[in-house]
Amino acid sequence: MAQMLDRPAPDGARSVSWPWYHHLLTTELTPDARTILEKYSGIAPEDVESHIYSVRDKAWGIFPWPCVGEFWFIRFGLALHPLYKTMVLPRLQAGSSMLDLGSCLGQDIRKCIVDGAPAENLYASDLFAEYESLSYDLWRDEDVFRPGQFFADDILADNDLFTRGPLMTQIGPGQLDIISITMFLHLFNWRNQLRAATRILRLLSHKPGSLILGSQAGSVNAGELPLKPPFAATAGIDKRTVFRHNPESFERLWTEAGAAVGVPLRVTAVFQAPDAFGKGVDSGFDISPKDKKYVTGAETRRLYFSVMRV
Ligand SMILES: C[S@@+](CC[C@H](N)C(=O)[O-])C[C@H]1O[C@@H](n2cnc3c(N)ncnc32)[C@H](O)[C@@H]1O
Image 1 (tube, rainbow, N blue to C red):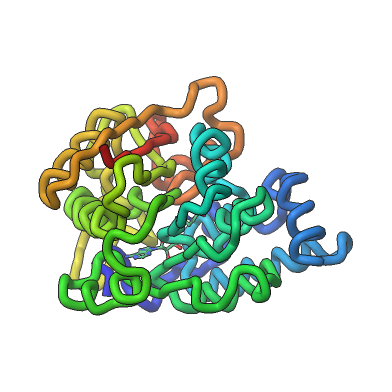
Image 2 (image 1 turned 60 degrees about the horizontal axis):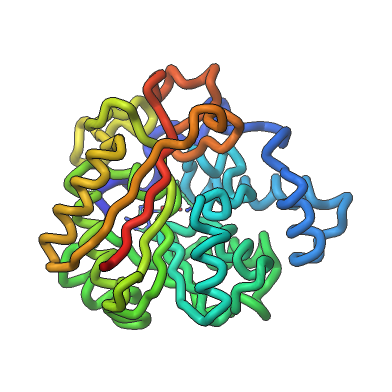
């Protein structure tokens, strides 16, 4: 079991009075998301909002991630990455494979399919097996993104378990051209990020140019950030921290991971341009400015990154 959370969720975490549980959709339902739900998933226009509320509350019951409360599962974080249009989509269209790790309800995979990526080369994986069927409730596309393309696995599992788990046995080491880790690593402390990074490198193809990319919450001042209730403590751990990166610390993490597994890497990490920051692309433990006191400070930034095998 992953060291970063306990199941069931920490006491009180499912309360709908936490500020990151948005009771009503406002800016989260973008025209893009509405179009995909209507045209790709076939939801009647008048039912789109109730459909989202119903799936969100089922997802909240599985685990009350802030990103679930915030409806981030209908925002397409990977598509906001500077390399999405220039590198990810062209490679997928040319036949590259991609894993969305920490996929939650798989919105980034669906966006790639809608944008022309062949569905058969796409995979999703998450700690929670329940997300597979809930993602079909949301996107209604079992005939496109086929059952069997989702793998329930714990990237932090003990070595032996991980080696025998679905990611390593059903996809296999060295098989993936692209691994997206959008809003993922920031859930963990440095030690677990390093562990996850070495696992991700084991899954990545040995071909030069193979790519890991994503975005996450970062901080001008890199370091371990103690989490506040309800996520502060988990079973057996009194105080949880997550490591918030600036570009330099992020590069250090991957250099260390690459050295540990003998993989040469080129790492690029940048903060989101300041003029774009704060325009509604927050998630994870980032929440709206008025509620930032719960978990984040003024030094918070969104970090976009790529890690390429050279
Ligand atoms: C903040 S959410 C981000 C989801 C999605 N990538 C997005 O951008 O909306 C992080 C996801 O990572 C998953 N996760 C957490 N710990 C994990 C672990 N140890 N192994 C695999 N997935 C994990 C969670 O269940 C959750 O769905």
